[in-house]
Image 1 (cartoon, rainbow, N blue to C red):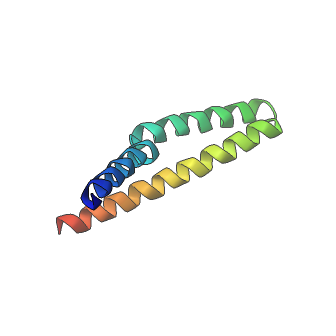
Image 2 (cartoon, rainbow, N blue to C red; image 1 turned 90 degrees about the horizontal axis):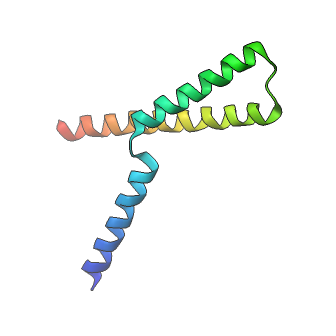
Length: 81
């Protein structure tokens, strides 16, 4: 019974991990493109408060993804050694 519960928790963690950290490179590219688009728009026109908030949120998400990517790389490096 405990073994089955642990398997269920493990599967839930895997699903969460896929959602939270899956396809990191693709998400980084999308965020980078969105930020660049806002930068260009900000050079020609003044960004609205909402656009500035969106840009900040995208930078925060990008930072989180890049930190997690680095951590995964370091972890995989140590596992190989």
